[in-house]
Each structure stands twice: as C-alpha cells, then as structure tokens.
Length: 300
Figure 1 (cartoon, rainbow, N blue to C red):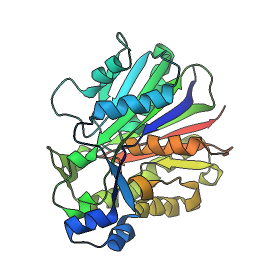
Figure 2: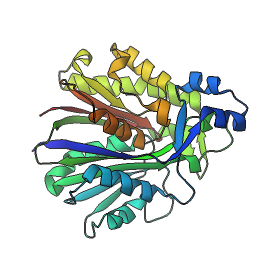
Figure 3: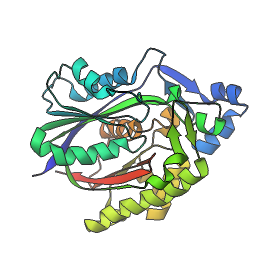
C-alpha cells in the first residue's frame, strides 16, 4: 500500500539573532560567520518557549482544520534527557488524547528517519503527523565555531495512506555508533566539526545515490533536493559530488541557521508554497549518532 505526503507546516520564533550580535559575543566578525557557514541570521526561542510549544504551532500550521491523526511522531535531539519525551505533551495539547505518540531523540537526522517510519506506518495508522522541533540555543556553549551555526524552530508534515500530492516511493537509513562522541549533548552541545563535515559530505551524497540507484533514477532527473540545512558549504559539496546544480538544493539556511532535525521540514514547508517541480524529490538528513538517510518521493 502506498503512502503520500499531503502538506507541511512550520514555526519560527520571533527573535532574530544576527551575525553582528553573535560576533560581539564570540570575538568574530559578521562577515567571517557568513563566509564560514552561509548564515546571516537565525531565530532563538524565548526562555519559556519549549520544544513542545514550538511543535504544537508547527503542527497546527500543517494540520489547519484537520485533527484526524492516527499516529504522532516527534523528532528532537534537543529534548529533555528524562522521560516522558515531549511527544505525549504535544499530542495532548493538540487534543489527540488516545493517539499513540512516538519520540525520536535524533539530532539533525530525526526528520528523515521519521519520514521513513511514517511511510511504513501510514498503512496501519492512516494519517501520521510528523513533527521535528529543536531548541538548539539552549545547548550552545562557549565554542564560537559551534555557536554560530544553530537556531531554533519546528517543522511538520502530514503523511497518509490516502492519496495526496506526493507519493513516497522508498527510503534508505543508516547508523554508525563508532562516531557517537563526535556530535553529542549532555546539556551543552559539543562537536568535532571537521570530522562531522567530513562524514556528512561523504555519507549524504552516498545515501542519496544508493536510493536513486535502487529506484533506477538518475540524479539529473531529480527535480529538487530537500536536505538538512547544516551549512551552505556542505550543501555545495553534496551537489558537486552528485553532479547536479546547486539551485536544485532548496536552502533557507541564511535566514534560520541550522535548526537540527527541524531544518529539513522547515525548508520543505517553505519550498512547497512556491514550487513547480515536476520531477522526483529527494529528502536527506545526517546527524548525531551518526545517523543518516534519504527518502524518495514523486508527484502522484
């Protein structure tokens, strides 16, 4: 049985944090930050704005007038380390009192893992609401090379067994725990930036090519690539490795920075409002764990 992508939603906090503000804090220049990352500004949630709060607002933007949800999946790498996770709270606030709610505590790659799960679980649960919500500003420490990258926000997608605009075709997922210490948080984010970028720039195009080969689709046939917005330099490397034009990689990182697992769905939400792409779409993410994966969709 097929699964379909129906629509997306997003929420971005109101507070805009510019490169100039961070430059003053971390002894860098605004120009250096933009050149290193492609980021000009990002959003920070206020102190009492939680991961669940942002998730609810993104979900409401996605659901609009519908509340027929058979399963809720919430991806967040910046969620609380205790239990329960935020998924149950989000379901309650949305009025989904008896709907199963699943937490995916996966940073950066959580939304692509969630999308792959939703594609398989829609047959059993009908409408699956996938949300990714991150408050990365709460994890930023004193390392300027890390602090300049991250922002806050939430994205959402509705996946269903009922026909919709995009049919989900296939997914490929991978994990490798030997690198788990290169990107982690115990309340403060630490990252071996060089090793993370090295692996991401290899594994993201690798898993995309694996997915395309399995489905006999050439990279040149893909209409759009919707990938985790880590930094602009990484997107450029992935496009170059695949031999496709960077313009096919939708990017909003200049405005929002790296919102971890939320970034792919926030990007998809903005892209879906204006796109006229007819070819297949590839979703891809890479993050802590290491976890990485890709999902293929086509116009139905």
